[in-house]
Amino acid sequence: QAPMSPLAPQSDTPDARLAAGCEARATSILDAAQKGDYAAAVRDFDAKMRSAMPAAKFKQAWELLAQFGALQARGQSHLATGEGYLIVTIPLIFEKANLYAQIACGSDGRIAGFHVKPLEVPGK
Figure (cartoon, rainbow, N blue to C red):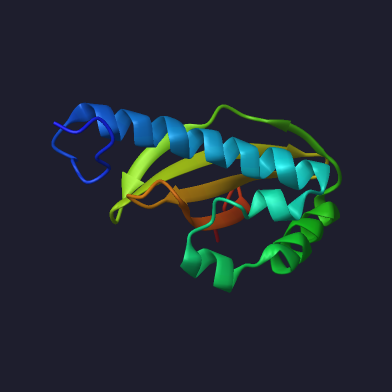
């Protein structure tokens, strides 16, 4: 068994390594965004994400969140899987609203999706 074989989902070790890596990347995206270092924020995006959301577009999207006031805290991250991706969800506590970031990692460990959504979905 090769020690660095990302295409071996039958073993628990690569999955655990992938999960830890995905959480670390999710945290580093938010760290970089909070510092205004958008080039670093998109560094781990896969090719599809990089073309869909280059640093300049990520900056615009992140700056839209200022409407909710200052980011005051982050909650505990949660890991899930769905549609072949690892998904890290991190609550974001702003002055005026509670949102959450959802960061998806592909099987190569790179970021395949990044979304920020409201924590409470208003019901009718």
